[in-house]
Image (tube, rainbow over all chains, first blue to last red; front, top):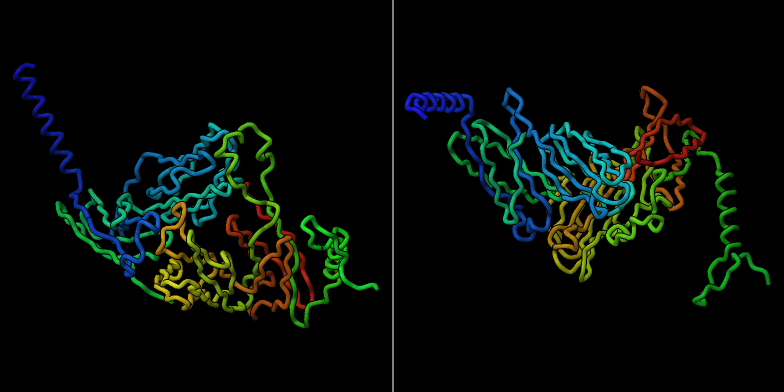
Amino acid sequence: MTARAFRAWVAALVLVVASTASAAEPLGSISGTVRTALGATVPLANVGPVVVFLATPDRAQPVAVPADSPEISQKGARFEPPFLLITAGQTVRIPNDDSITHNAFSYSKPNAFDLGLYPKGDARTITVREPGAIRIFCSIHKSMNAVIFATPTPWHALAAADGRFRLADVPAGHYVISTWNERLPPVTAAVDVVAGEASVVSLTIPASGG
Amino acid sequence: MRTNRLPLAASRDGSRRPGWRGACLAASLVVSCAASRPPPALGTSALTGTLRLVPHEGVTLPGRADSYGDRALRDAELVDYSSPGFAVVSVAGLESPRGTVRVTLRSTRFASRFEPRYAAVGVGGEVAIRNGDDQPRALSCPGAGVLTSVAPGAEVTVAAARSGELRCFALDRAEPHGEAAEATVYVAPGPYTVVDSDGGFVLDGLGTPPAGASAPATVVVVWHPRFPPLERSVALVPGSSERLDLELRVR
């Protein structure tokens, strides 16, 4: 490469970096813990997936939906994985990887669907339009149960067994952070994300009722 | 000496059980009784019928296909279409009977369970959950916002404020296969009945829709823990009995 060509290449690279930086939103992150007011009496490891997610009540423009299509396979007369975390608007592919016919359906409103019976090698898809939990069954096999949880934004995570979570690359702004678990009441809090900073949130599901 | 008891037949274990003739006699008595049900009380109506689960056409059953030689598939438990199991028929738009349904949490060395696993109550009623263990148990009913510890022998009352499923879990123990002990209570929107094991149901003493209701038609709602809910409109006329034969199916 000649010196002139090298200078041109560097100038182009600087331009690209500058334009990318101006288009990108300032990002921050949120980390924290989820626990229940009953403490160690209810180990999170016993309750199944605990989702932590953000909603954007003040955001004017719609958030981008991930382009990929995650899968739940029908294999060994089970849905695998039995839990899937996605963003509302994503398409989920449900292939039949068994040697027998299966069905997949859900009556969870407002995302109810029925894919009908389909044989080995076939795959069908659903596009989850609305946030929320979707319980999936097969009409033939009692053991086939799965849950999809669709969040309103792509900023979501599963809490670890010790309750810790981290949401990375979140645009600066005001959010509502919530938990979802099939077996626990939800908890919600307001949180501000500041560019270049890590906000810390402690979410405690209160003891109540009864 | 002749008696009016059903004829009995000896079984292989030596006990005596009603034979097929007895079963036929009992069935004919049930049919004749059903046919001659007294008319509903003055000013009320009744709803009778059956509920049936309808399987897919062309589904391959175990033992009929080579693919079920695969042990994982052969051992897979099938959905039982021969009986509706626990299912509830309710009438929306009429006054709820409310009431209280009682559920007990018990555990063995291996697992915890609620008894009964499925139950029903009218909207506005209560679910009373008793800890039948000798240890405190953690109880969660997410739909009712309940998370609490229940002392041994104590009872917790959960309000059945909204119609639909109310699921409650015991969360303090790791149960087999990652499952949690669960009770599902169907909170019926109005008068309800649990379907018999043979699919029959009777709802009587039904009032009329409140004054000012826009239409005489009332919505009948069928709930089953695994199948999509079913709704049918029916016109309930005071002094008469309507019949509905219902089917739950997936495509």
